[in-house]
Image 1: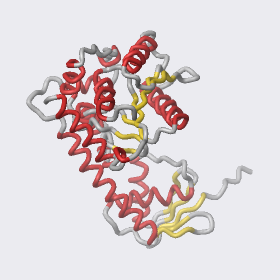
Image 2 (image 1 turned 60 degrees about the vertical axis):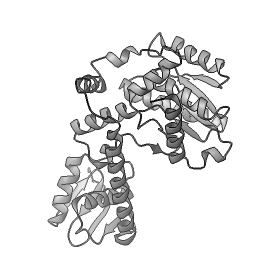
Image 3 (image 1 turned 180 degrees about the vertical axis):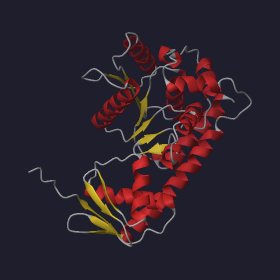
Length: 315
């Protein structure tokens, strides 16, 4: 694919996600790490929207090389007169490294966007990332929400490269004479994604961009289900003095599961029951039983009712 064709595809992808972007003076924020995919995003965005982009790189403080990698990106941006900032978390990242690093990264990027009045943030997730994510979600037994995988647009974050394969992005960067950074964590077999990536590398002859079509179809289904649940919530969930009741529940199982979660969150918005707990609760409520989940008393029957469980008297 020629560079011009790639630019056309990129501009079309951005226009599909933010239809009025080209008609405004808005700045597009870019999350750039220095890897081939994010450098391709930087080059494509710079060529497509000159003077209308700003970039940021996050140094999580987890690797000694990270500072130099961020400076590498800063130098590339300076050569092209692209505003760039290096962001660092104020406290060390602990616990589940990948999950906590992601949380810190988006927190820093959100603050950066607010300070610079940037409306949209583009990340460099591509078709190979999407396929890996789908496979990982299948292996973890995810439902339809999880199988929506990486969404092309979520809040103010857009991912215009989801239909682009990694090979195409690497080739594009190479034609510009830039040698991307090779993050050693991409070879760390302790990460699930790396093992899935290595397994997929044994396959050939497949169009990885089609994974995004599957994920988009699943996301459309998720959106349709959620729309139906919102309609049914308005019609059949009624607030009570200290909880709520569901006066109709003869719906398909997935609809019932989501309506049940709505009812539970009326009583306790922080409750996050496991799937097996919800399944047992639905079964019991359909049999007319009374059960407790968390601190919520749930009564079955023709109408299901939910309210805080009575406080126990320890005397």
